[in-house]
Image (cartoon, rainbow, N blue to C red; front, top):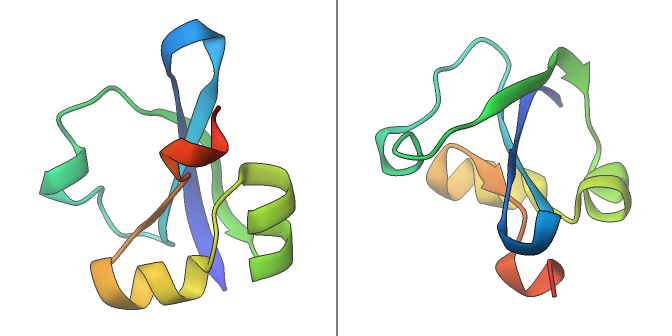
Length: 76
């Protein structure tokens, strides 16, 4: 799956990630926070999403919500 990847800094310096399908804009429900570009048009599989960006079930999340995001429980 090709995605555009964004990041933001959370409390205590943790970083969360947001993946949206390549070329799509960040959905309204997550645009109220400041995201910065990490990569555009990158290939991302579920294993890489989970291990590198702490995003569980990226393809499933994108299918349901239009985006995938790092789980807050993964930041602890």
